[in-house]
Amino acid sequence: MPSTSHPINLLQDVHSRMINLPIYFRERVCEECSWSIPTFYRKMRSALKPGSDKERITPNLSNAEKEKIMAVLDEVYESFWEYCEKYRKKPTRK
Image (cartoon, rainbow, N blue to C red; front, top):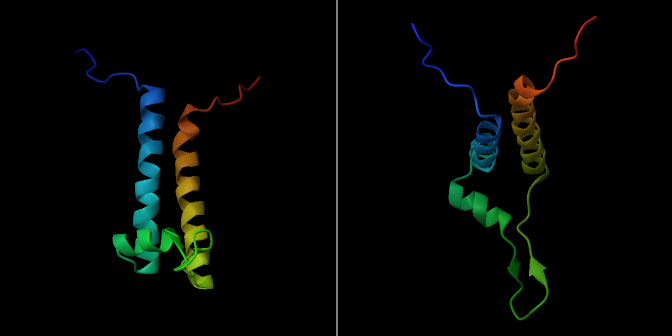
């Protein structure tokens, strides 16, 4: 019986995973911080201070939110790193 599976295209697989990283990151941050998607983008955006054409206001993040964001970043990055492990060359044993 012929095999119906095709070899994995490394470039396509890794690229597809990388494209989804920002979405997964956003979803995890929203979940951990109890934010809606609009809140995520509002907190990410900076705006010009009224009456100023140079001074910017950035939304304040609490220390807890900063810690959660970094924890999610580490989780997402580590998960991607581990996923790609299957493509890394393993050392040959003598």
